Length: 328
Image 1 (cartoon, helix red, strand yellow):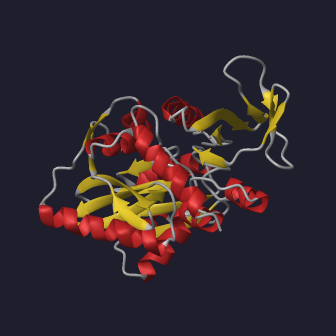
Image 2 (image 1 turned 30 degrees about the horizontal axis):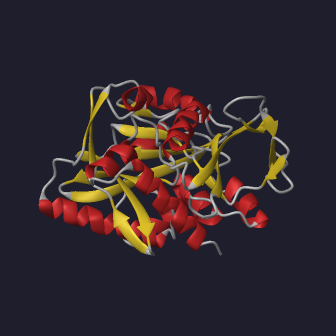
């Protein structure tokens, strides 16, 4: 059997690059070496490199994404994309790989770009009747009328960068005085921001993927945080409890699965996604979708996969096979 060359691409240019390196390391560790030749590739601001297990890092040739392994020139058969943030989650890498005709495991470039832009994603989904929080959009340089904003979204509200992940730059605002500092903080991550009503209810995070063309929804994880909301510290520094499966009713579970399937389908997703919702009065209200969710040891998706009784190596196999099968 011909072993496929899989380049696991990690890193990226955003605040999330360290988390991405952890996700990539887990994928490299987990992939079945009897089936695949696994290559660890770092895509960083300072350069793109293949990192052999021993030896010097080798530069990636961007003409064809090739690199050398000893005397051999390697062109990957497939890219396992574990970059969170730009350029692996916002469509840039996907578009480049599509031009090179190399399949990759995440959403296609347009679906990735659309979902990475929270405002655009919400606008599309609201048109299809997906429930979302009330929101106001602000761009850097706009004049800010705090009273007008609070009239629309109420207090408490969330201030978020439009295109950032891992809760970087997000604040929960309880008073009018906190609004401007929260907006300034969000501008550190993006010049476009979104201000949303803080929904009240159970927060859940749900993975979904395709297998043989069918959308499969993983068991939901309930997020219970010690902090005011599920922020960076809660996500990565143990300040939250993640309960899988979520402690929600059968009816809520059914509604949630239906909504996750609909959103995956409407946004024309591929690969693994993780959608965040607040169940307010039992109804799922959509917050956002991640097209390259974390795969590190403490991440939510690996826990959901294990809950189904599947091994991570089997799950990664499905993502690779599906990406090769679906290459346009």
